Length: 347
Image (cartoon, rainbow, N blue to C red):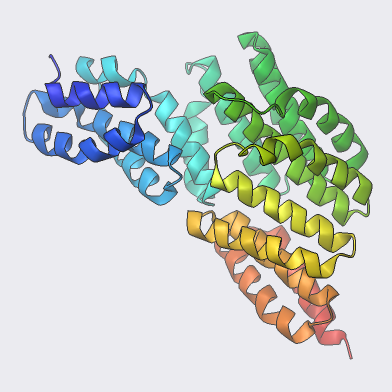
């Protein structure tokens, strides 16, 4: 099968990174080929190309709709295989979005097949890293450390230093979330020196996005643990990156704003903390990133308590509780219940 000219133009636009052209042409190509008994084999490819492009544009809900439909329709046709290979690169984009939007059950259903031995090592590594994130979400730290060791072994198989550093970055995040702040900060210092480098190109953008997640997570956990100087040092490593446009992802701008606000809050700068936390909440809601939005709501509630606004804090806690409960995350729900109990017990 020779793809029609319109599809070839769409594919060329995708390969050169022309998001406007891909999104402008995708529906017309679908209309042309979906009723053609020869060309309709390429329908999943069009859906996946559009979905990946939407993901890059941070239209996460739309992207997931296209990616999931494309995966469901994918078959064994030789024409489709020439266009998308095994499809694993697209499944991994979908997996990342499922985690960002808090669709954890669906993420687990995708992690399982992507970590099977017959998958490419690169795919198994990315899916294992996603599995680490799921384990931490549910506070299963023993499992997270086991998976980190698996991921490190896969990175060594690839003989990829950037991937090895990315796994170390994940380890720093896990250590911080587990409360092992000294170890987390030491490892974060090492990986941030390698990852947080401003500059053009997809590879540097990927590395910098890893750096933002590490620095902001360790900063937030350190500040909450009373180690404000460590928290400030983490955020300082992002200064050159954020001042030159960051990673290009709005989500990362939100991560930085939330960390900046919570570090100010935990260091006593309560008035200054209000706007960045609120801005982060707005960003995450706009993107549809439910877990991050719920966390920002919880941080707003904690700020209200510190400012002495107990009455205002209660509805914020209630909203955060509802959002975390909808995600099926019990640890944060228990923390909120304890905070609400303290408010009720106060005179």
